[in-house]
Length: 205
Image (tube, rainbow, N blue to C red; front, side, top):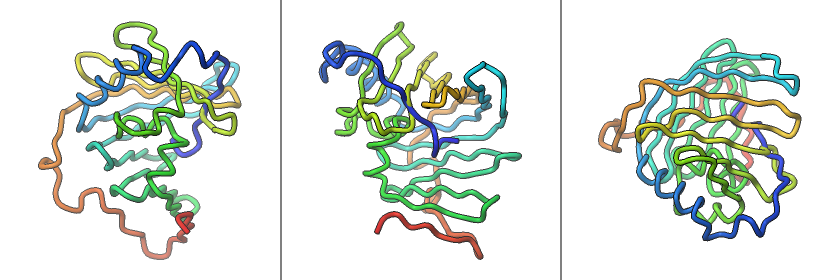
């Protein structure tokens, strides 16, 4: 789901200049989340707010460029960055897609969690609903993600709600949140190994 999520944009750019307080506030809070692991539950609803999919999984992240986002059955998949390449593995179709991280951050606002100081922030508009709730919108009309609502609680990521252009919303609730450093993971933990017999769609060329 993360690979396909998207944003709609209907706010005036002048309301969200690059140095607006909401942007700086969110960037600082994300900088404080420089490494963590957490479990998540996911619920996907359609434009009529009907549940169309549920799943569970876990996420591990170390800023500025490494993460694993693993969704368990029945919709098993893995989104992973080794620092340079983002790998998306879908066991059902036996395919792995590889893209450059630097390109993916530009089109996927979720990856802003990795890089609070990235130039990619210039592609998004930030609105602050409350002390710990933010909305991220894109200025790219071709983007797949329309809006991301991010909620923090007790210095931890609590919820993400991702709205796509078809009106479908993916809601993630996080639990068992643990602060991590790079030393908490073994060398090569974020290195992706291509499973035997799986097709590679290499979009880095």
